[in-house]
Length: 257
Image 1 (cartoon, helix red, strand yellow):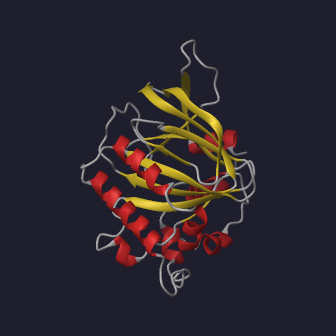
Image 2 (cartoon, rainbow, N blue to C red):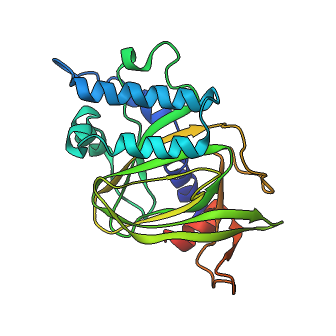
């Protein structure tokens, strides 16, 4: 991948916030008329759940369980309308095998005075064969709800860090469809890799960053709390995988060429 295209892909792929600012005006009419009570309740529960994690009243594993249950509790079509997904994703060009991204805007009265403090909501969109390239996270949790299309999802628990690699134990290798939710934290499925199985495959992601570490990191993450890893490796005799650390450019070249 050429350096210039790598920079642009990095801006789209990694956790940027500029898109939300640009779209505030564009989605100002998303809730014209009366908003659905059930979806407002979902959004408030999401805000409260993220606040509970930030305030350490729940741990990361409980956050995973609760966010999976919460996001699976609302009909996907209703959630897509509430977040104005069709409008937001019109900007997607699917010009590479990396994800296009956009940040939905939640109602200000739902967010409250603190807004989105240390957390985000984001839509990732990929063409068939596009990928969220394999990585692990430090000090972060996330959940991924399939809005449209399908993805082959491969996840793994992070067992230990070495000087230049992460030792993983695979936990999932299968296709997830509309309405399915997967999540990650220090405690479960810290490594993930998604490959779109259809054009216009979309996920709705929730992430909380700068969470207290619940695992001893031996490797430093980038500014987006991410470490890219080469997971397509032979298994060790005990079933684990030793995944060397990669640069973003090298990982994108291999997993999203």
